[in-house]
Structures are given as structure tokens and as C-alpha cells.
Figure 1 (cartoon, rainbow, N blue to C red):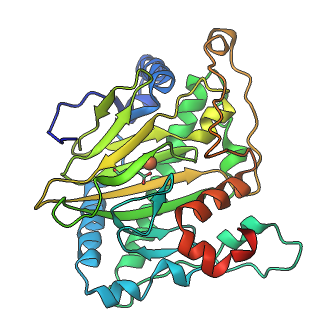
Figure 2 (figure 1 turned 180 degrees about the vertical axis):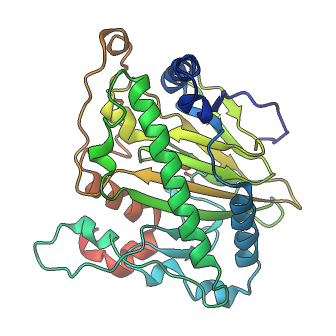
Amino acid sequence: MSIHTSAVQLPILDLSRFNASPESRSEFVADLRRVLHDHGFFYLVGHGVPPELIADVFAVAKRFFALPEKDKLEIEMVNSPHFRGYNRAGLEHTRGKQDWREQIDVNTESEAIELTADTPAWKRLIGPNQWPSALPELKPLLLRYQAEVTRVGIDVLKAIGIALGQDENVFSTLYEPQPTQLLKIVRYPGRDAAESEQGVGAHKDGGLVTVLLQDSTPGLRVRTEEGVWLEAPPLPGSFVINTGELLELATNGYVKADVHDVVTPPAGSERFSVPFFLGARYDAVVPVIELPEELSRKERGITVDPLNPIFREVGQNNLKSRLRSHPDVAQRHHADLL
Ligand SMILES: O=C(O)CCC(=O)C(=O)O
Ligand SMILES: [Fe+2]
């Protein structure tokens, strides 16, 4: 496997066209409809997130990863029953194989729910984040960024609604009043420092839409239906947007959620990324949307992966994937569910 910097092969969509003249809007929607069906992967520009905020997020993320290990381990995820906090490289697994990246997971900031015998298990996901005392500026900055990319994700979902011939609020029952807001800051060490070529193994994202920010090092790849791997190198000023399994489910496979992975960067380099996964509210059950005839003819149906079954019940689905990705947290806090 080799990484080389390649040209941008995925489409680039400009969200500001969605809010411009009626002609611009209908061109944008037609482009989006094509992209959703072909890949569910594209670059988004014209999204309105201030470049200074993006620069600040990368700067603070790099400061965090440069901290002494003890300051990072202060917020180790295994301390958190809610799957929040820091993981060293090698602790996360995709399809049973180690991923080689270190990261912090943040989700909606809230208080833990008091659990009784008949509380649904997914309520264990709700609770506070962990924040490092060595870097007090991390919390306000990441929470501000999380709010901003939530807005971007919802704008994209509204455009997707229109592209599918629906009302722009067709998905609002899934994300109002409180969507799932999983935000990560991630560092992929270079090949000299990593014990695996797998930065992250091949997977589909589980939510509604992912809003991914990449720094300057490539590594992200997207697998097409024909099994070709397209590189998705960083494009300054853009997000990579991809649709998740919940949209595939909701559209009976009209919308594609492409498989993707990240290859460990070359020796002597490192890669930073900030993925944000906008998901449905935990108590939602994903409906199937009735698409107009010309779209429903192209529905592919849902392929069931026996190794990774997907549930329409959002909370259960989220808990399943967290338990699989983080076996140490599962063992320590949720052994009764295993
Ligand atoms: O780091 C990246 O560029 C993408 C990571 C990814 O696909 C994920 O965390 O789901
Ligand atoms: Fe992903």
C-alpha cells in the first residue's frame, strides 16, 4: 500500500449555492442528488464556518497531543462509562483489528442519567465529557466547534431532504431536539512510530452525516461500488461530508454510505483530523422514507453485514458500536451487557 498525493477525485459542492438564486439552488440540489446516490462522499465549501475557528481547533488539538502522556491519561476513556475521553493508539478496533491513532472523543455535554433496573441500556451513553486540566482552553473551543459543525450537518440534511424530493425538515424528527454529536480530535502517527498500516480500518459511518476536517496530510480513502479505492486528500477550506448508515436505511439504499479507511501516514510524518458524526437522537427509530418514483426505482435495498448488524433503534445501534470499538470500556463498565 502506498500513499501519494493525488488530485481531488470526489465532487466539490458549494453550500452557499443552496441559499442563493432559485437557479443556483436547483443546480446544487441536482448535483447533490447524484453524489448521494453514487458515493455519499463529497467536499463541501461555502459552509460558513470561520477559518479562524478551524485554525484554532487544529492548534489546540496539536497542543493536546504534544502534552506529556500523564496529562493525556488523566482523561483516559476507560475512566468513563459514557465512552468519553482519550485513547492511546492501538486501543480502538475496527472489525476486530487495531486502529493506529490516538484521539479524544467528545459527545453532547450532559449529566449522567440515574440508572435503574429498567432503564434502557443506551442511556449509559449519556453523561459528561472528560477535559484535561493541563489544557483549559480545549473545552470551550471544542464545544463551540461542535455547535458549529452541528449547524453544518443540519444544513446538509435539509439540502439532502430537498434532493430526495421531500420537505427540507423531513429528517428533523430524527435530530430534534437533541441529535447525537460525536466529535473526535485525532492524530495518526507516521509509519515509523505506528504498529499498524491501519490508521482506521474499512468501515461505514453509523450516523446521519459526517463532517470531517482534515489537516494537510493525506490518508483518507473511499471505496467505490466497483471496489476501486479513491484517495480523498485534504482540500483547504473544505469539509469532507459523507452520509452514514442511518441515511442508507432511511432511503432503502438510494443514498449510498461508502466504505472508507485511513492509511497510516509515511514515516516521519503525522496526520491530524477532526471528524464530527451527526447522529439521530438516541430514542428515535429510523423510518423508511417514501421517495418519488424516479428515485425509488434506483433504491438498492439494504445489505446486511452479519459481522456488524445495524438496528433501526438508534440508541441500541450506538451502544453496540461503542461496545465493539472500545472493548476496555465495555469490560470495565458494561460487562453485564457482553
Ligand atoms: O481521520 C479521518 O480522516 C477519517 C476517520 C474516520 O473515517 C472515522 O473516524 O470514522
Ligand atoms: Fe469514518
